[in-house]
Length: 355
Image 1 (cartoon, rainbow, N blue to C red):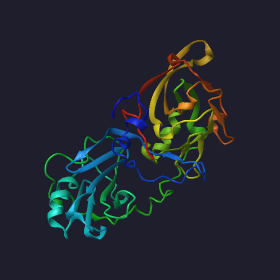
Image 2: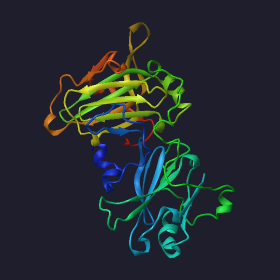
Image 3: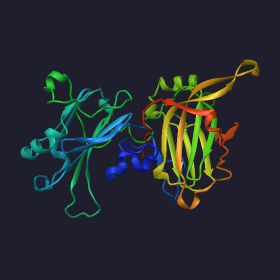
Image 4: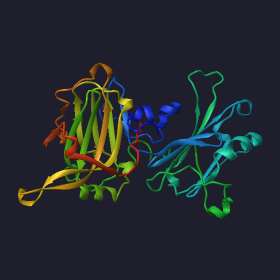
């Protein structure tokens, strides 16, 4: 994914081809109506984050895989979505166009047909035919297939190497997908009751900054996180909405409990925001306070790139809203690096992003 020290906006797959990020559209912005663009993050990048299969380009997060095939040239002129048959089972994808057999063989068979390395959730998969560019004349079409992974994880590629298996051998039941997202993916269908309050999940907020960056780490309670993950994978647990001057971190749970809502002491570049789940090790007082020990806890880390005209030390870094639990407890600002160390990524070897 490029230089690990760079912000995600400069190293993520979206920066490579300008495509939208490969995650389902999340709920409407938690920041409410605004004339300022709201950048929404819902999932974490997997590694590798992008690649090619045949003529198709693919991108993946921990929870999803998206393939995009540009239908370019005379064989695809005037193509309509009704011409395509897109079939999927838990372990494979088959795409065909009976009205254009030669184009189908040249484009589709080598690019959008194969057996998955892991299972997908068939009911959450969908496809669409999207027009490129703004000009209505001679616009080319892109066939986009969204796959939802049954389990969070990184795939080396969307398909196993070699020729696809015979469809009957791979699965007895194949589902023919209709174009467009499923009804359950309307912005609120993925919100469930996680059975945990924000107080049971959140422990502490640590704020660090340099002249260029702000890093926010929401330290979490392991028991609360384990309870939430019983009902939702990490890829469908968190939501982050931000503008150039504020952010909101919330659970994608019924009622959307807010953990952190604040305005910045300056302005940031939202599209260069990086976030990840990780484990951090910190100093903790032992029982009785007589000596210190080291404690490892899960954390949601958010790294923000300051806008060029605001690249200086901010005081304060954050101005919390009233409903921000992150502002109700002690906030440790400019914590020495030796006091809080990265341990390991909890959900992905590389921080990832969703929009």
